Image: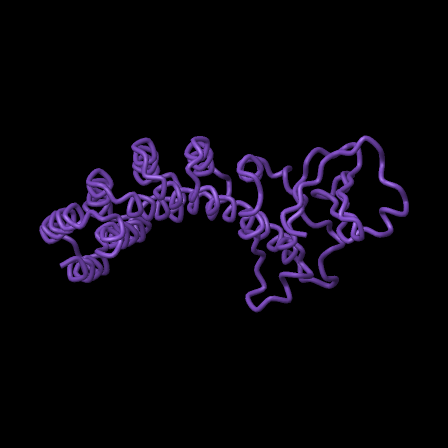
Length: 281
C-alpha cells in the first residue's frame, strides 16, 4: 500500500484488527498510533490521530535493504492528492514516521538520529519534486515558504525547485536568498540553481552579479561556482530548443559570454568561468 492516508475512525480498532495490521507507526514517539489493516485494506487509527500519511519508503527495514540505503517516497507522494502533498510539505506531523523500535538494534550513537533526518529530508524533497511539476496556484507560495526550512538541505532543494515555476515573484525570492550572506552556503547555491532553471534575462543579471561580487570570503567562492554552473544551465541550447525559443536562448548566451569575459576573476573561479564561456559559445 503506497501513500496511504489514515483518517480517524469513529471507534477504536478492535484487537483482531490490530493483530492483523501490516503497518503500525507511532508518530515521533508520541502515543498516536496509525494502523493499516492487511486483509481488508481498511484503515484505522486511534481517536487521537488526524489524517496521517503512511509512506512505505520511510520504513527503515525496507530502505536499508536497498543498494543506496536511502529512503525514497517520491513515487508514493506522486499518487496522492495535491492538497495532501502540500500538507506533507508544510507539516511534519502530517506524516507517520517510524517508531523507535523500527530501527535495527545496536546502532552506533547518532546513527538513528541521522536516519530520522534523512527520512524527513526524503519526505520534503519528494514533496518539492511533485509540487514543482504542478500548475496548482497554491504551489509557488508553499515552495517559497520551504526555502526557510530549518534544514539547509531541504531549503536548498526548495530554492532550486522554485526556479522550475518561473514566476516573477520566485526570482525576487531567489535574488534575496543569494544576496543573504547569513544563509547557509548550500541554500545560496540552491538559489543559484533555481535562477538557472528560471531561464530569464533577470535571472541572468542576478547570477552575473553574484559572480562579480568582490567579497573574498571562501564561502562566496562556492556560491560563485554555483552561479557559474547556473549560467551554463540557463543558456543550455537543448533547454531553449525544448521551449521552442531558440532566439532568446542565443541572445542570453551572447550576453552571458560578453559579461563573463569582462569580469576580473582569479583562481578557481576564473577557471570555472573559462569553462562556462567555452560551453556557452
